[in-house]
Image (cartoon, rainbow, N blue to C red; front, side, top):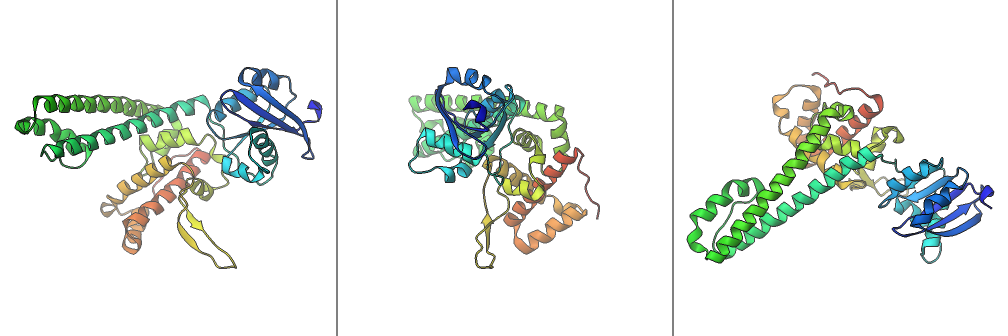
Amino acid sequence: MKQEMHVLGIDIAKHVFHAVGMDDRGNVVYRKRVSRHDLIPFLAKLPPVRIGIEACGGAHYWARRFREHGHEVKLMAPQFVKPYVKSNKNDSRDAEAIAEAVTRPTMRFVPIKDVDQQDIQALHRVRERLIGERTALVNAVHGLMHEYGIVMPKGVAKFRQAVVGKLESEKDKLTPLSQEMFWKLVEEFAALEAQLAYYQEKLEALAQTHPECQRLMTIPGIGPLTATALVAAVSDASAFKNGRQFAAWLGLVPRQYSTGGKERLLGISKRGDSYLRKLLIHGARATIRWVGRKTDRRSQWIRQLVERRGTNRTAVAVANKNARIVWALLTSHQAYELAKG
C-alpha cells in the first residue's frame, strides 16, 4: 500500500501523531498512529510523497525535518482544513481531512520558515511579552499609589521620568512597609526596561546587517522593528500573486459581504498576523505626522486623504500601500525610490 500512496496527511502533536495516506484518486490506503520517537524513521522509509500539515505549533520544525528526507511538504491554515473534517472530530479524522485538503488545487499554503526567521520571530515574541509585563506593572503601581493618595501621570515615558521623584517627594504618605514595596516595584520596572533594551538592540543590529531589512527600511514608516518582523514572517514573497494579495494576507483590505450582485465593503478584515498589522499601522501614523513639511507625490496624496477621510482611515490606507511596496521590494530585490512632486 505504501507504493500506492501519493499524499500523506499528518496531524501533529507533542507526543502522538496520526498519519493518513491517500492514492492519486483520493482513496484512503494507509492509517497509522505514530509516536514522536518513531515519526522520522517511519517517514525515512517512505518514497517521496506530498505531506500536508496544519500550520500550528512546531509545524515549521517538522516541515524542515520532512524535507530532509525528500518529501514535498505543504502547510495549511487550520481554518482552511476544518471544512474537510467529516462527522465527529478526532485525530485520525483530522489527518484524513489534512490529506484531502492538501490535494485541492485552490488551497492556499503557508510558506515554511527557516531557522533564522524563527530566531528573529522569537526575539519579537519575547519583546512583545516584556512590553505587556511592563504595561501591567505600570498600571499596578498607578493603582496602588492612588490608594495612598499619590497620583502619577499617564504613560510609560512619564512614569519612567516621574516615579522616583514622586516617591521621594510624597514619602510622608507612605508607611515603611509600603515604601519598601514601591521601591521593589521600581527595581522590577528598571529590570524590565533593561531586558527590553537588550532585545531592541539585538533587533536593530539584525536589521542593519540583513540585506532584505535594509531594503525595507528605505520605505517611509518602516524601521528596524517592522523590517525584521516582516522578514521573519515572510520567507518567500513570491508565494503571493501580487501586492494586493499580500496586503489581504495581513488583513489590511476591506471585509467583503456581497450577494445578489450588490457589493458591500466593511472595515478591514484583520486577518493574518495582528502584530505585523499593528507595526505597519503605527509606522503609517508616524509618517502622517510629517507630511505637512514635504512636497513629494506620496505626501501630497496622504494630506489629501487626511482631509477627505480622517487620520485613522488614512493610517490604514498608508499601511496598505506600504505592504504592497514591501511585496514589490521583496520580489524585485530593489530599494524604494520616492516619487518627486
